[in-house]
Length: 86
Image (tube, rainbow, N blue to C red; front, side, top):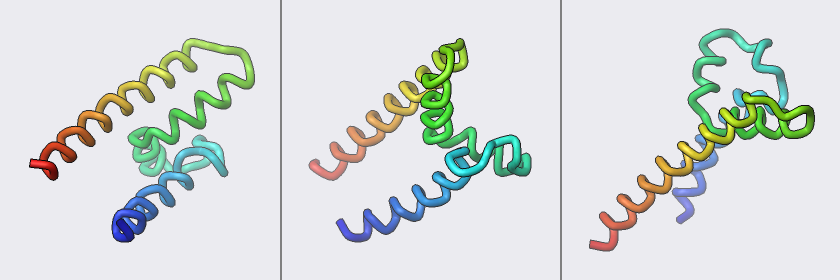
């Protein structure tokens, strides 16, 4: 369990800084922007910003991408759990 926390923190911390939480995505260099669009936190931040203003089709896209991330990660968790229990 302690090693899981360390490895998850190593993933979460950079994700926080490249997701647009602290600085706008437009201010980032292109390679960082590309990487940030591969993380679910970027879409969560964007959806929260959209929900505080007027709802637009971008909000629906963000929610759909978050749902897709949920499905993929849930399936991965089930596969890994089944592998460890058998």
